[in-house]
Amino acid sequence: MTAQILDGNALAQELRASFKTRVAALTAQGHTPGLAVILVGEDPASQVYVRNKVNACAAVGMYSEKIVYPADVDQATVLAKIAELNADPKVHGILVQLPLPAHFDEKAVLEAIAAAKDVDGFHAENVGALAQGNPRFIPCTPYGVMKMFEKGNIDLTGKEAVVIGRSNIVGKPMALLLLNAGATVTVCHSKTRDLKFHTCRADIVVAAVGKPRFVTADMLKPGAVVIDVGINRLPDGKLCGDVDFEACKAVAAQITPVPGGVGPMTITMLLANTIEAAERNAQREAKR
Image (cartoon, rainbow, N blue to C red):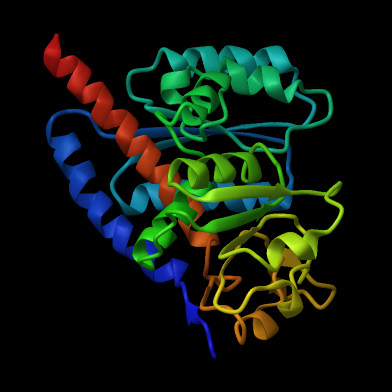
């Protein structure tokens, strides 16, 4: 058996084409969706991510604003800027690129973003809404994974799903989304005693641990759907995921590659969240 490849690049392009229509309709009403991205410091990976986000906005006709601060900027300056963006009607989504320098209180910065503009879905209010099954914004990477399930015609109802990793950015919201979709969910992490026991009975495995080729073929149930959220750079400069792709694709029914799997979907769903925020804003204004 060779697994069907779940192509994130193709799905991202398909979705972004539909976004152009939605953005054009909003722009015609005077509500061009706007995203503000704050970058603190000169982390090379963060610079690439921010550039990609700004370029993605331009490609679908959205307004974007990039605010860059040196690594030694004080937190109060960034918080003041967030307050300014919260009040700016041109900005529908605000994103602070993580990680922040060590002298920042990351939680305080994220909580300063207005919940209605928190397009990353990290604000406590939005996390709570997701936990209740009525999300305002879904964190972008898990949102992208759910779209890939949808595109792959993968029915999650009653399936055994294992999420490896419990981060606030991927693992926890992914587990909630799978639970809300009717799956039976197990979250595994660094303290899990027998990881293979859990993964071998799983119909769905989502790997988000940040360890190259961590999930091996012998850890999978034949016919499982394998979602690889990880992206790791090997000593030779090549990229790989958290899943041993070549070995696992012989066991899985469907699998995502790295690169070209979940990665392109993350920025795509950031655009989706910002457009949704602009649409909500336009609806509110129409009722006034």
